[in-house]
Length: 200
Image (tube, rainbow, N blue to C red; front, side, top):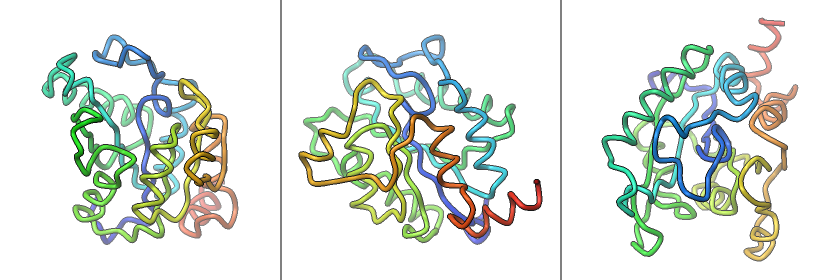
């Protein structure tokens, strides 16, 4: 999708938002389990004119638990399944580094979001972020995202960590489906609202 056609960008964390997270890392497609309603939510956001960009920390690569090639294969399958259900992932950015690497791409650093902006040329202030952790919220704030939604479908409650960092999301939702409901509510996004009216 050319940058000129982007009406609204929605950044999505992966594990805990799109698929079920695991304390042992999701290192194969066989272990990849879509969360209830996530595929339908991505299809709905796509129909509303939102460009979906996945930004995900994947230190399992840096830990030697999976190869970069396997991760790319998983993401290719992810794109295909989302497309089969009516959605479209514009791009996927991942950080393969360990938490101790000091890179600028691992969330809570905003590097992946800023790289997406450079590649696709959208206004960050019009973008939204949906994540399940304090790292997602902090990365979105540091990048300048206009709206940030925290979902409760991850492994733990991120709100105490946010409070400790003096941060807050604009909205807290149960899961990706509820987050999409909030983002696409009437008046939230003019382009999305017009699309909803046309399809209603």
